[in-house]
Image (tube, helix red, strand yellow):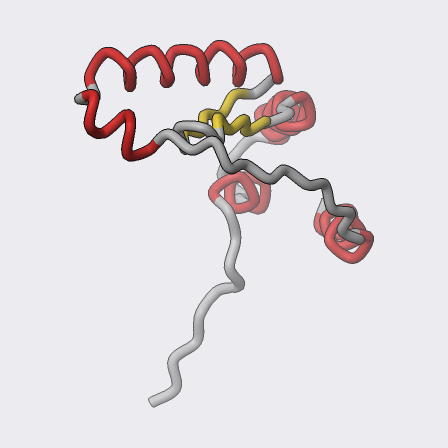
Length: 106
């Protein structure tokens, strides 16, 4: 017996590849997808992260996450998670192959 699997795809890719979805719906989905710009922000002092589709939304979500944590956590947990030793660094990563492959799949 030989098992054969489909190529791994995201739900978004499967919808675009589907013969059952009208082309006008696919175009609308592509336009919406192209405008998404997910962002992730981190509060390293408390090890809390949050996400949003824009920097502003991510900031608002992070503020809310920190507030909820401080409201609900015990003083012991806050002290345990709080860290003053924080090291932040930037790195550059070449992703040319990734974007080229994405362009070819469209």
